[in-house]
Image (tube, rainbow, N blue to C red; front, side, top):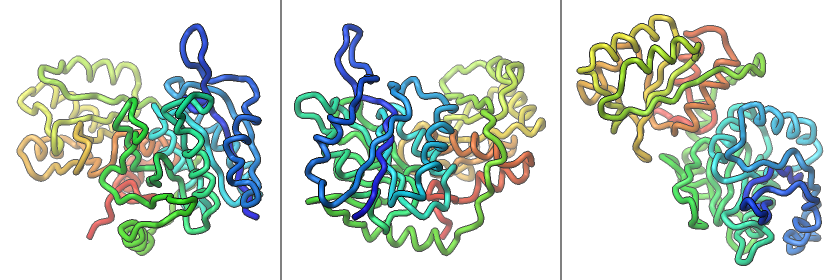
Length: 342
């Protein structure tokens, strides 16, 4: 019988109505979870362990390491791990755990719901059962999000809806699989992509420490002020992600802004260009605005999501003290976050 550990961190799936609105409860949810897992009894041995109870809007980077430690303490004793998590920051947590557990030989599955498990017409019970099925499947190795029948690579999950039960898409990457009638079906597209990734696989450095670097996400808007860069420098941020327009555009005619970004690059503060677009990623070699940004030392996020770039940069800064090694890490596919070059 396959053994699966369910770690609870809160989120809508474990929320209850209070006078102040829905809130993850500290009350014992084991009975509720076991009730929803009855359909799987006899097929899986499932243990439940509480990590913390938080609305995922309150998740901070330190929490990722708490979850990491909980996984590491138990993963050798189980066939897979399920993490119940709020949907608002699940993409960030899934991406960070993907880097922290790059190369893991079992499945670590994050799931949640749009309606509390205790509520009417909740999607939580099915998502929970699907997550257990995926976690126990030996074909899956790595970190994934399971939601509304779909299995998504942990570095590619993107929340597209605040209400719809079909809340997540796989961004710039094939869906890993679908779960129907309590069975996991791996997609051919993912199998092909995974084969190419394994061919191009490289060794992943171990995290040196749990430092939480300060990373600033700067969204480009018309008329953006160059003084924002002064703030970033004065506050000691160690990395900057720019959410540019389209393929990586920014107002290069703003000479003061570009000069200050050039100053950051000169200080070897990594500056990475992502995009405000959901699909297709960044290409700094297409337009003059992108090529100018590249000449000013801005790195490309290629087709990575902002969530993946943010967590990869945070993890990378904790894995190496060398700027050159960090750049190499950022431009290397480690766990499906970056398209494998043809």
